Figure 1 (cartoon, helix red, strand yellow):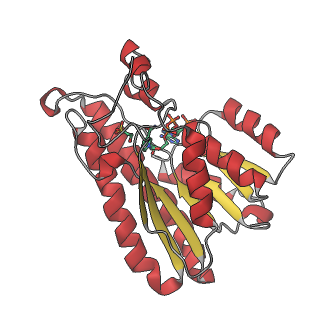
Figure 2 (cartoon, helix red, strand yellow):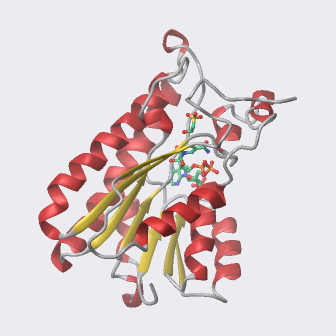
Length: 251
Ligand code: NDP
Ligand code: 8X3
């Protein structure tokens, strides 16, 4: 993996940050993206002892900002071999009739359109080189809909459809495309979903949730398979979880 470059969106927290740490261990050069510059700086200074690191600060909802950010890449970071489309969150958890349209916009704009914008900017160079690996972070919520999950689930169902579309359309160019779909992972996800509210604190209580490092490990496994192997789609639950609504909790 030495001399490969990976771009990770949402690298300031949770799954994206853990993936940056995992990739650094293997000497993969890193382009770390997010909106919180202080965190990007902290992660960069921790990881640049192990590998080459460049940071880009942009909002994935802003196509122009993403384009400007990618144009600013130093020459040694211009070739992106691995794209991890990870930036995303749930915003709110309400019945559809009570849903907040700002939350709906955020989920569709970040989880779906943001992923598309970033991919649109990076796919051409992969097509030209006839190689590349795109990992889209979906969710178990992309495979089943649960009560009050409505629009978040819709956004993650869209990620799965986009992943399949990418795999089909990019197949002639030798580009691997994969969706990794975690169940409950203990990150800042629930803090964002519940806007810092009390409900966030109970989501990962009473059982051992997946840790971001568990998913990072799986992402590294996926990108380190031999050239002829493409892991196309993975559903990963904590052992305590059987579906979006069935989690064995012990108190
Ligand atoms: P975190 O909240 O810990 O991390 C989310 C990351 O996304 C942050 O780095 C954040 O960076 C970035 N991000 C959010 N909005 C934007 C934006 N508009 N522009 C750029 N970056 C943005 O959550 P997770 O690590 O859990 O989530 C990562 C992915 O995993 C998401 O796609 C999520 O849907 C998915 N997932 C999570 C699960 C879970 O249970 N935690 C389960 C299944 C899937 P910053 O704020 O600095 O911009
Ligand atoms: C995150 C997992 O179950 O909160 O995608 O939707 S869940």
